Amino acid sequence: AQSVSQHNHHVILSEAASLELGCNYSYGGTVNLFWYVQYPGQHLQLLLKYFSGDPLVKGIKGFEAEFIKSKFSFNLRKPSVQWSDTAEYFCAVKLTGGGNKLTFGTGTQLKVEL
Amino acid sequence: KAGVTQTPRYLIKTRGQQVTLSCSPISGHRSVSWYQQTPGQGLQFLFEYFSETQRNKGNFPGRFSGRQFSNSRSEMNVSTLELGDSALYLCASSLEEAGNTIYFGEGSWLTVV
Image 1 (cartoon, chains in turn red, brown):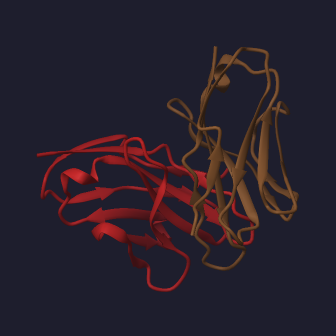
Image 2 (image 1 turned 90 degrees about the vertical axis):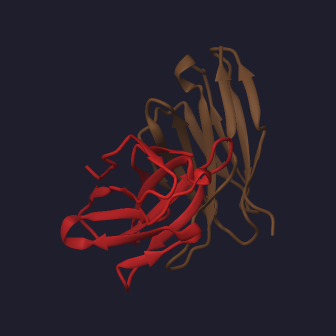
């Protein structure tokens, strides 16, 4: 069965620390990959996406992610987090040619302390 | 341009009742999907509609149904509500093109008592 795994459920960092959130997927075909963020009380917003080409993709607010096909991974990174990055982060996968069905990971709750 | 709009935003229903949630996609988007978000199960895909046809379906019981109208607006219905149906129901819309972004609405908070 298709699945997405996010290894870190809760992460606490101090401001200016570096962030890396893991995401692994289990799919047999060609995939599109996404990271979404959900700030407290707000709706899901797209941080970045990978469809093809350069496996290192840059998103909004200084976030980036690297697609490593051999490892079925799409880890999210940010060199220096801010208090405003406190949110829940979701990795999601979509099969190409399979409509717009997203399979989400369980999410990572990030808390950034001042 | 306006984002994905969902109504109502909050509602409380009694066990055994039914509920209908509405979603207006971003203008020009013909694909509309629905997701259920709960603390225990996370974000789970319910179904997707494209051009008034259900294109994908998740693993939910038949009590959960949906439809899409010719203007791409969509509704989902849950019949015979159970306490476990309490959740945030999210609607998402997108264009039908390679590299499309899927945009989410703010959701409808359903509480079943």
